[in-house]
Amino acid sequence: MHYSIFSLARAALGGHRAWTPAWRDAQPKPEYDVVIVGGGGHGLASAYYLAKEHGLANVAVLEKSWIGSGNVGRNTTIIRSNYLLPGNIAFYERSMRLWEKLERDLNYNAMVSQRGVLNLYHSDAQRDAYARRGNAMRLCGVDAELLDARQIRKMLPFLNFDNARFPIQGGLLQRRGGTVRHDAVAWGYARGASDRGVDIVQNCEVLGFAFEKGRVAGVETTRGPIRAKKIGLAVAGNTSRLAALAGLRLPIESHVLQAFVSEALKPLIPNVVTFGAGHFYVSQSDKGGLVFGGDLDGYRSYAQRGNLPAVKDVCEGGMALMPMLGRVRLLRSWGGIMDMSMDGSPIIDTMNIPGLYLNAGWCYGGFKATPASGWCFAHLIARDEPHPAAASFRLDRFARGAILDEKGQGAQPNLH
Ligand SMILES: Cc1cc2nc3c(=O)[nH]c(=O)nc-3n(C[C@H](O)[C@H](O)[C@H](O)COP(=O)(O)OP(=O)(O)OC[C@H]3O[C@@H](n4cnc5c(N)ncnc54)[C@H](O)[C@@H]3O)c2cc1C
Image (cartoon, rainbow, N blue to C red):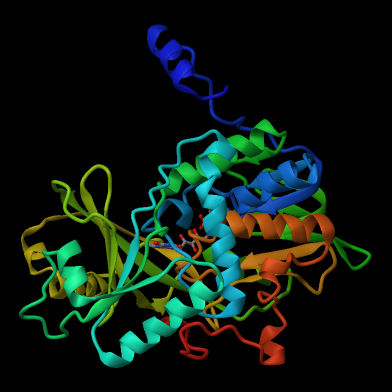
């Protein structure tokens, strides 16, 4: 069903009885050319681009729960391409360009809102670091503006400029950054992939792998065995558990990250703002709630829920930036499981078992990467060679010492 102003009007005139399900709830077939494990944003985008860009339609996405139940439906919806390192800038900018045309491509309203992402700085050293990052971005054709305190005050007069422990000196603004309705991304890609023949199989957990002649030959699932010539893993926080079923140990730890939504307020925050003296980021949803988050909870877990010390820490960051937040009521919070890699950068690569491919290590920045991740993973699976935009995301970079440590924190996932 094509969505348009006319189909909306027709459906409204018909009492909204004409709508059909957005994607087929498929039953698993015994065999596929490609099986993608994980119906999150990355798995669904990979299946969509496999079908659309590479003509591979005998593809299944196996999801242990419902699609969108993982991090793709739990994140704080921020997209941006304001990176410093060459291996990252090109990749995230490719993602940003795919976001910019995603809704037309998918014929689906994902509420892509390029409202701007502003990183505040609070010291001379931080200003220098942001100026360097902005210059690196501009050299790669990415938009970046370094603003001073006067410009920020004009833009966001409600921030704490006068009595702050860490006064705001300025900020780095990427106007093309912004937010996207997170679960609509899962639904839009699912619909697009399903339309092209991909089977989206929900309630189908992968429990193990089958091997033949040194190659991966299929998966054991809660809905029976499924054979496949190629298998792509895109299970985010469950990566280490799934890889262990194939006998692999990866440089990934799983940590909890929480997100928070306040009661609905009148329009207040026009863009995405991040606090540079602590870890706090906030935007306002179209329903009026402030959507915000901060640091990891600080311990390893596979549970999709967090604890109170992180709630307190995040709210303190918010109060430092906007003291009036103290009077706002917190409505909801939840946790997601982050696949934290040892250098804070992702992995899109083949494995040492032929036929097995890995998409993981997204830490807490993988939502913005969804379109480019799917694009590059589909390329890797279809052609058995890495896409040039993801060439830095090879697994062997840890052995070669060619790590992509954007934050310069070393192998300490809890600090990325
Ligand atoms: C609170 C929070 C805030 C965040 N904020 C941002 C942000 O603002 N910007 C940003 O860029 N990123 C953000 N992220 C990170 C981003 O959401 C993730 O990096 C990204 O969504 C991960 O990729 P995914 O969508 O494929 O993962 P998921 O949606 O988690 O998909 C993985 C899927 O695999 C399934 N699965 C697991 N094991 C199995 C199995 N054995 N068999 C079958 N299926 C299985 C899971 O059920 C899940 O649905 C945030 C994350 C969280 C939790």
